[in-house]
Length: 230
Length: 195
Image (tube, rainbow over all chains, first blue to last red; front, side):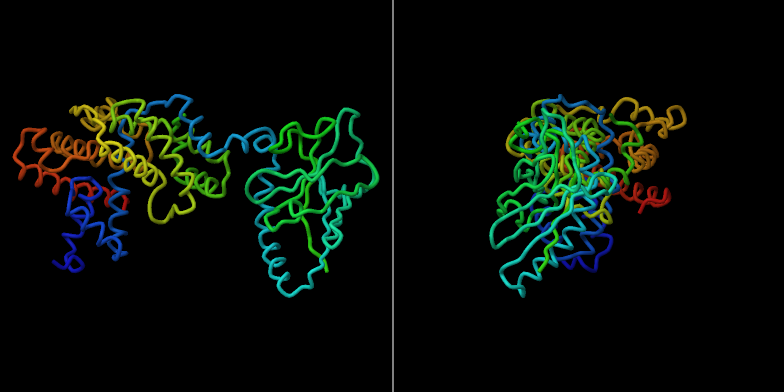
């Protein structure tokens, strides 16, 4: 049987495949054809769009809240949902910055191939009004990270500023606590300059730093990206 | 939260895009907008809440992981998601779990009314997607028994012979009704501007 040249049969099989009445060996054979026949796949998708809305004919039923909690647990979304991720515009801006960063990283990774091994980094972190508040310089050779405050960034006596590396995926990594004036020297590790780092951010935390090992608990005050310089 | 406008396909597509970028907030919005519909559907197939809940969880885990592979030019977002729920639900059934009790009332009561007499109960007023409204309208033009045959096959994954047995009809009649009904639906949906 040549299915390719039999338009009415193709139509009928695709429709009954979606409806569910195509069963057993005939169903398996049809799935075999689907693998090698893009036009048949398209035909089948069209029938899915026609018939699958029947699913909406069932009376809607609200699932118990445990259902969402189970999904959240299985996908480990809870950590990401906590505190800052959904409370700040930060998350939204991260999306924009990430794609720009991805392009930049691609260049950086490309450059690494031809660049000498010792490279330095610089980042300027800005507030929401794009005012530069901190300048970071990294010396990869010495493993030193210097954070310099531009002017003062006064914080209440029971608070402290904390620096984070925000990876493209997963939890932010703490790079250390900052003073509210002057200069702070921290270790420059792969946590800070790994290729997966999309962004650097400074959050306002209780004295002693974020109580949550998975990320900041306070608002993000400043953010910016590493730029690699030679 | 199954507001009509939350089933706007473009909005659902945006949320799916968000889920593909690991945006947990977009994924939550997608869940809020669609979970009642999808759970109602899973429950219709499986009949038991605990099973339907398992299927919902498996389905949304799959939606999160596969959102990046969703191709909006191929299928409407609700089609894509209900197909995932359908496959997971029938997987459960094939693992030997008892199917939902077969009943003739396949559809929600208000939809039943709308399909029996679209003039008395306007299909437009139903809280379902535009695609589902178009299908409901076209199914209302079918004979009641033909509609029931389609519903039995679709919601309970029945073969021609199982439908025939269920409806006490000759298998040839069932095959003919299904074939003709599908052709009519296609023609009617094309007229309504659906491919």
